[in-house]
Image 1 (tube, rainbow, N blue to C red):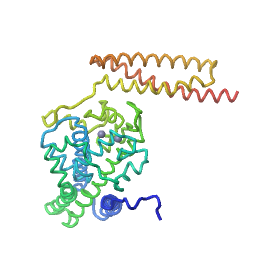
Image 2 (cartoon, rainbow, N blue to C red):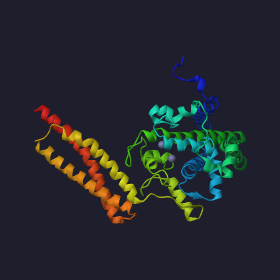
Image 3 (cartoon, protein in one colour):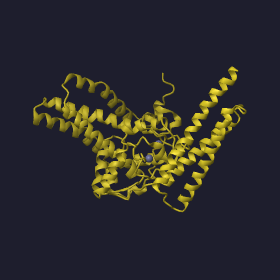
Image 4 (cartoon, rainbow, N blue to C red):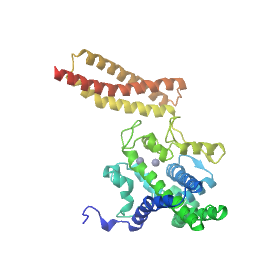
Length: 387
Ligand SMILES: [Zn+2]
Ligand SMILES: [Zn+2]
């Protein structure tokens, strides 16, 4: 009946959980909200748990454990292990093993959530269908040395159900009992559905969007070697992980949104925690290296577009000839900036802030000029054709 679905490989436990929680979120949760009066406690519990669990994935599972982008004291490690488990995204060992394979083999068959297999596969399909052989976890030996990580791996399902569903259900009951704002059963049900089910679904899909949409939508500012992209709207729901192009290029940087105006709550939290001594050794890529990557990407775009402009058949058109001269000047300037930055990076020299500040707009203008020229080419070609 469904010839394209490999039913023999369906992971029935994961699939039932993922589809079950999603169905409850779009049926039972709206029913609860429509049946009972709005209650700020339930909403507050959803937000707080969403943040605790979501940030445990981005700050803990991702930046701390997978990438070792900073060091953290025991309370932070234990907190992210416990609340991260409540995301129902497996143990740190399994998550990090998959994620390290994703970075190492991105966009190929060995990438667990390979986007070249399409949105559905990268988003959720890779979890619904079992792998032919379970991953050997041979790329997380460093993490196996931490006894707390090993403990979490052993008890991950118990922790997940206790914190993910038990805690909000209990909190809902205590709230109802203490305040009398609702019946005990309404408190229990609200805690379970809103703090548990809806929160699990939202955290999971925001993580999944990093593997799917963040490899499809947005800009490739730092490198177009892989499919990862930067988009600020994705960063809002994912605590800053939407700057995925930067992250794939400089994966060991504790920041994903590297510019001061980027929305990256995970970065802000790690930085604030470092000020009170809970995190340390925050790894940062130098500004010169970051700009050098942007310049390289701009050079690649020029090399890609230039032959098409030169063979446009518009030679002799005054506007076009002038535009091409400007384009060559921009290309030359990019080369000069590249040399200046390459030397600074090689010699480990830090350029002044004002120099870096002046180079960025120059580079942006040069990249924008490519789009301007593409538009101009289209307009002129149409004009020539129209006689
Ligand atoms: Zn990725
Ligand atoms: Zn990563």
